[in-house]
Image (cartoon, rainbow over all chains, first blue to last red):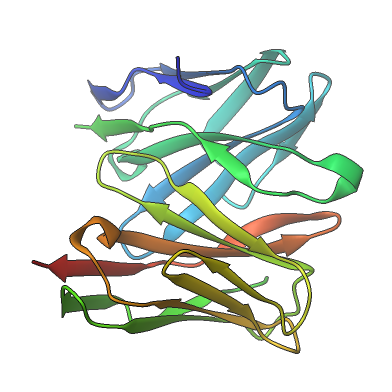
Length: 115
Length: 110
């Protein structure tokens, strides 16, 4: 099994629909992240969580919400999807020993299309 | 806002050639990471550099962190088709979330 598993891998949804993207990890890391990737823009941080009771907004959180159900699970929701949320979404975890991030482990991504 | 620029944006070379890609910022980072991303997959960490002037080698890949910790380079010797992918740099450190550059898309032709 993959260290970081994202479901679904692909999703097409209609404008205005609510959609949830799920992420689970077996790395045992406390820190989890949601990123969105658009061509030419790189990876942009949506939300991050340093433990189950800690949720923080990233640079592009508008229109998104998250839930950290357990150390291993972090889900991303689009309450009312719009076409400019069409993108590749990645979940990641990190090892933060001593407060320094030593690198992210990414899932395989969810390709979301909003029509 | 910390920004990372990467150059070139695209690079297409023949198998066996050498190449260097660059990652630059006006900000100082405590550490810098390089990732490679293949189509349909998430980025995979290649290396983390934390000391100004540090050089790390990973087989045919050589990574350098600038003395001022604002820039980094990735040099590939004798490129192979398996090196094809999107190379991303990310800067961050203590108390900072990592910021990603837009990437260099490398194509190595057989």
